[in-house]
Image (cartoon, rainbow, N blue to C red):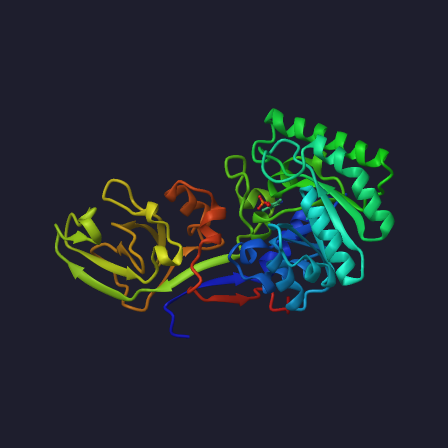
Length: 387
Ligand SMILES: *Cc1c(COP(=O)(O)O)cnc(C)c1O
C-alpha cells in the first residue's frame, strides 16, 4: 500500500466496547449504531465485530446502509433503519428483513405498500418525538395514527415491533428535559399499550444515556460513539472512566523532514513563524482527509496534537488540503518515513480523537466520521481472533 497514511481500526476494541456497554445496561439488548460507515470506521468489519461482542441489533440511519449490512452478509442481528424520504426502497428493506422506523403517516402508508409488494409483513418501529424536535410523530400524531396502524396490523401488512424516541440532552443527564422526555415516552407507551399493541422493544438511550441514565434503558439501548471507544460525555468522564477503548488510530509517515532557520514562515499565510533554527516535518494528511482546518496552529496557540517519537506537538501553521507541518524542534532526529500518530487509543499518553475535537472546537463524533474516503481503513485485531 503506497498511501502514506491510514486509519487503523482495532476490532478487538469494538468487541470490548460492546461488552462494556452491555454491562452498563444489563436489562437491555444492545443495538450498535453503525451509520455513516460505522462512524468512519468501516461499516461491515465494525458491524461484524459489534455482533461478535454481543450486539443483537444494528442501527443504520439510511436505508442504503441497512441494505449494505444485509448484502455484506450480516445476518446475525436485527437491523433498524430510520431516515428516509418518500420513495425510499422500503420493499427491499422488508425483503432483507430490515426493521423500518415510522415517523409520519406517509411513511406508514409506504411501508404497508412495500410489505404488500414483498408478500411479507413489515416490521415497524413507531418513532415518537418526545421533545427533541427532530424526527418522529408528536404524541398527538402518534395517537391519531394508531387506528391505521391497527388496521394494517390486522391486514397482516405491518407488525408493530417497537416504540422509540431520542433525547435532546442525553449528554447532560441532570438536564430537566431528560426526565421530561422519559415521562412523555412513558405516556406514549401507555397509549400504545391501551390500543392493544404488544411491543417487542422500547428504546430511548444513545451512548450518553446508556452510560449515565439507567432509567431510560428499557429493552434496548442504541449506543453509537461509545461502540468506537469515545466518550459521549467528555465533560463527565473520559473513555477510560467508562471502560471504553478508542478503536481508531490515525497514523502517517512523514513525507519530508528539513532544517530551516529562525524566522521561516510555515504553510499558507505564514500563520506560524519559526523562532529559531529548527526541523520541520511534513505530515501527508490535510482537511481533505478530515483534519479540521480549525485545528491550525500558531506560535501562541498550537494546533491539533501529533505524536512523534514519544512526544506530542501541535500542528504548526495552516492545515492544508493534503498536508500539515509539525515543528519537530532543533534536536529532532526523525527522518522522512518516521511514523507519526494524530490520534489513537491514548494508552501511551498519545492524543485521542477527543483531543482533536477540543483543538478544533467540535465533538469527537465529527473527527472520526469525517476522516476522508481516500484514507485507507486497515482493520486489525489486537486479540488476534477473527471478528
Ligand atoms: C446516531 C444515533 C444514535 C447513536 O448516538 P450516539 O450519541 O453516537 O450514541 C442513537 N439513536 C439515534 C436515533 C441516532 O440518530
